[in-house]
Every structure is written in C-alpha cells, then in structure tokens.
Image 1 (spheres, rainbow, N blue to C red):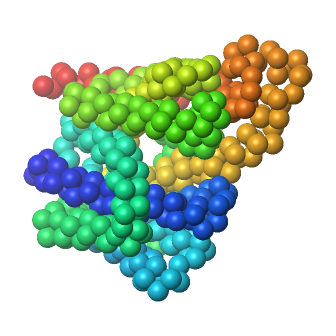
Image 2 (spheres, rainbow, N blue to C red):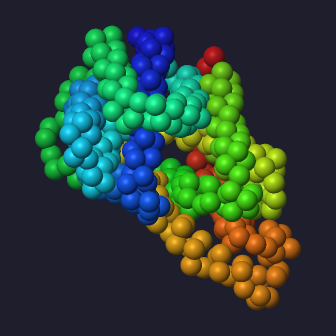
Amino acid sequence: MKDFRKYIVFWLSQSISQFGSAMTSFALILWTYEQSGSALSVSLMAFCNYVPYICASLFAGEFVDRYSKKTIMLLVDSVAAVCTVIVLALTMYDGLAVWNIYVVNAVIGFMNAFQSPAMAVAIGKMVPQEKLSNVSGMNSFSSNLVSVLNPVVAAFLFAFGGLQVILLVDLSSFLFAFCVLAFFISIPEDGARKEKSNQFVGTKAGFQYLKKERGLLVIMLTMALINFFSRLTYENILSPMILARSGNDSVALGAVNAAMGIAGIVGGIVVSIGKSKKNSIKLIYYSAALSFLFGDILMAVGRGSILWMIAGAAASFPIPFIMAGQNVIMYKRVPKEIQGSVFAVRNAIQFGTIPIGILLGGFLADFYFEPMMQSDSGLSNLLSVLVGKGTGSGMAVMFLCTGLAGFTISCMSYRRKAIQQMKRELDEENLREDSNL
C-alpha cells in the first residue's frame, strides 16, 4: 500500500540535498566569475550541464524501466558526491581550474538524465493517484524556496568560509538524503524484469507512444518553447536589464528575484494543499498564457522596481500549476511499464531548447536588440513608446517579444485538435471516476 507519509520524508530529505547542491552551484558560479571575469564562462557552466543531460536522455529511459529506481537514484547521488569530493580536494591543494568545473557539470548532467526519470517513475509508484497534483506543488514549493534561500546562504558562507565550507555542507546534505533513501524508503518495483535490449529501444518506444498520444507530444513541445523563452529572457537577461534600467541598483534586482521566488513558493503551496484539478489541460495552457501575458509583457513595459516585482510574481506564480497539470496527465495516460522511457523522452524534448536559449539570449541582446534600440530608426522610435529609451530598452523589447509569442503559442496550442481530443477523453474519464464514487 502506498504511504504518502513516507514520501513526505523522502521529499524533505531530497529537498535538503537539493539545497546543498544549489549552494555548491551558486558558489562555483561566484568562484568561476572571480577567476575569469567572463559572463560567457558562467553561461558555459550551464551549457556543459544541459547538453550531456539531453543526449543521455535519449537512451536513459530503457535503463530506468529495466532496473531498480531506488538503486539508480542511489548510484547517481553517489557519483554526484564523488564529483563534489574531487572539487573539494582540488580546492584544498589549489588545483581547481575553470575547465574542471565544466567537466564536473557535464558528468552531473549526464547522470541526472537517469536520476530525473527514475525519480518521476518512483513518485508514481509511491504516491496515490489523487495526491500527484499535491506532490507537484510540494516539489515546486521546495524548488522555489531553495532558489530564494540558497544565494543568500551560499554568499554568506562563501564570504566567510570560502568554497570548501560550502562543499562540506553539500556533502553533509547528500549523506543525510542518501541514508534516508537507502534505509527508510522502499519503492515498489515491477515483478518481472524486462529482458535486456538495445538502450535506444526505450527511446523508440517512447517516441512511438507519443506518436499515438499526439496530445502529450503537443504539451511537451509547448513546454519546450516555454523553456526556450524562459532561458532567452528570465534566465539570461533579466539581471542585466534591471541593473541597466535602474542605474545598477542591486537592491532592486534582489527585490525582483525575491518576488519571483516568493510567488513560486505561494503557487507551490496552493497546488500542494489544493484538490487535484479535473481539467489539467486547461490548467496547463491558461497558466502558461497568463504567465507570459502578465509576466513578460509587464516586465518589458515596467520602469521601476514595483512593476518589475509584480511582473516577476505574475510570471512565477502560474509555473507550479503548469507542472502539476502536466504531471497529472503523464501519470494518468502513460502505462507504468514504459513511464521511464516516456519521461526520458519528455526530458530530451522539453530541455533540448534550453542550451539554445542560454547561448542565444545574451547574443541577441548585445548584438541586435540593444544596438537597434540605441539607433534612431522608425522601429526603435515606435517601440520606445512602450519600453522607453536608453540602456536596457533592447532587452525590454526581448521580454515584449517573448510575452507576445508565448501568449500566442499557448492559446493556439490549446486549440490544437490533438489537445481538444485529449481534453474530451480526460473529461470522460473524470465523469466515469465520479460516477463510481
């Protein structure tokens, strides 16, 4: 019998480990920027993490479906801990170089391609169907709480204890989560283990399933575009835009980031304590459309920290609802025996656009939008009515573009035939479930 209380213990331990890992990531960004003074070197850290993750996701699904989910998670966590120990040893002997961090990020990204679908399948086995939406909200809550707290705590520890102290804290959090998973958490496994086959068989099975479930594929493609636009603007140029338009006011930037994190936390709480939503399709697309409409566009036209904070909150609050809606549909529609393959394919599709957004956002800002808005062209003068003039106005135009594009894509995707067909099927399933109560 599934025990939700055990999942809460598992979630708490993983959240603590996630906090430790996030502090290490933030500290490594600070260390790398101190060494190189280059924003590109920092962007490459994320790039080196995502590319192996996407490539490995193409064959991770079959592996996850075949083997114990608990064992996979323990092995992946152990590899990540070994990487942290290596970085710690290098710092102790003054041997750490920026390229070492790129390699470590690549290894961790590769291993996370197995960790993510394994955890997704494990959640489906541990948690009752009616609690899946709540679990998604809990995960959003912990993720946003980590995003708010980790820069503050990591910056303090980095300033007074250095990188080594943060690495030791990370290792302690790993050890705690590892022991909880190893000794206190049991994850049900299928009775019969699949026969060995080519690792790409799982990827093929995942894509074949999505060819039949066109609605799920459309949702994944929508999420891929959302991730692209997010990395293009919020994850890439938000900080330089606010600093440029506020006269390098770091307090304003901190307030906007705090507003985004708090809104994400509130959204996660609402999802985690609320009842599972029957119309998950509408939840996904309405939430995405509102996030772009009130988040990106208001961020573009805003001229002060108050409006930017409201925009950041409007962009972040709907995100937990998007993820909850997608997860409910995935667990309901995908057969358990191929969930690992489908989740892995989903990760490859949805995260495949992130490296492109990471590299493209800064390039477009520096070499196209900012110079265009500093010119005296007709287009520049027209757009300046909405976003103003001066440094940072080109990046504001980028937010305007992503807001309009994201809102339009969300509305158009919701009207797609495959999405409407899936919506009708889910409505019928909900009616049958309600009639059986």
